[in-house]
Image (cartoon, rainbow, N blue to C red; front, side):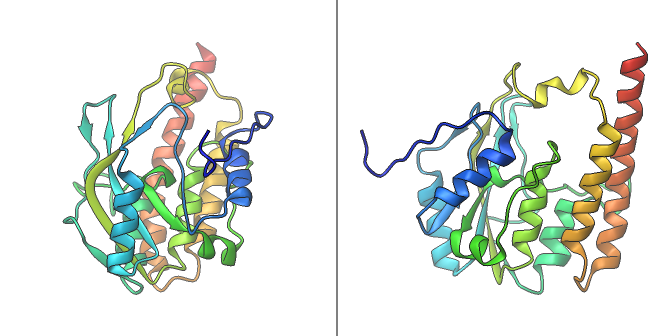
Length: 229
């Protein structure tokens, strides 16, 4: 009943396909994403727009409350922290790629698009799309590629997005065997490498990714064991 809203029903082709179609249909200045089984604060996008415009930033990232753990993900930075172009790769991107070493106490930053507000003009300029051939952390790849173009990014420490642990969700199928997981994780690594290639701090980012890779491949060993059961 609200003429500002448009609803598109498509054949189920996974979240990346749906998001790509949403991007192609969007007409506003900003683009945000919300998964179907989660909840956002009624003021989420109003606040993120305010953060972006006040800081003249290209992206705003808010905190997330996870129902599963009963707590917020948290940021290692204060509210209103602004990252300038030269700081984004070495701090923001680095935190999303992985830890410096396996037992590092640092907080890794979940790079999901659901916590972000993006500018449509930058997405269009980059012709940015979600990869449709992976179904895990595909939104991290999108966020990393977007951040490469940003001149400024800003942090909102308020938990405006609520991750709901839905027993029927894709993520909840963690304990079931997944065919071709190793192949999928290798693709994710290749996508991530492509997203960080050419950055001045590439060597340090690649070391961080190696730490994350080990986690991925340990996960694949566990997945193979589930098939053996």
